[in-house]
Length: 136
Length: 112
Image 1 (spheres, each protein chain N blue to C red):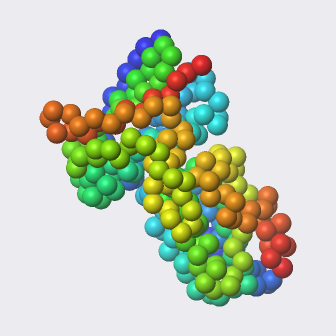
Image 2 (cartoon, rainbow over the protein chains, first blue to last red; image 1 turned 120 degrees about the vertical axis):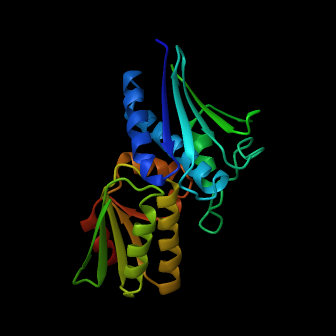
């Protein structure tokens, strides 16, 4: 089965619950376990939170595009935003956080939950973040 | 997210949180937690049995609670973590820094 769902939503954290609901519903279609579904929801929330905080500087009036691509052997979440470039941010998993050094905790969680993370700065000056989960 | 706070006779403050915790609601959770720590109780219990999802903003709030508890000499115990939230804490590698009890009652008695 192959399918793509496309969603546009404001960069307002109140819409994070909608993303969780959509992600959870699609993950159920491909019969992922509750634990895997929880990890996908966590990854997408952390990725969008990162975009809102860092790329969009907590401005809630931008538009974020969200493609959920369901392919034969993988599930992809593709996020696009018009904020500041994030070159290098997603390349490596940051060190595990500690109570004294919490920075990068969200990034760490994305790396823990997804199989591949691919960031690109597109020619039209949009950021594109692709999160990939292999399906077994 | 819904929250409530009760003062127990054992000198323990209990915060009950219900609903998902993310960037949208974690400031409200943080405000409540901070206000409860200001009461300078013997212990603070956060009952998370009604929380099916928590992201790093929620974890960051709990870590702030950990810091406040050390500053105030207050015990800080998390209770009733659902499997998903427990797994998120493990993934963050921060689970070992918290006192965690299975139930609110266990958490209260561990402080008492």
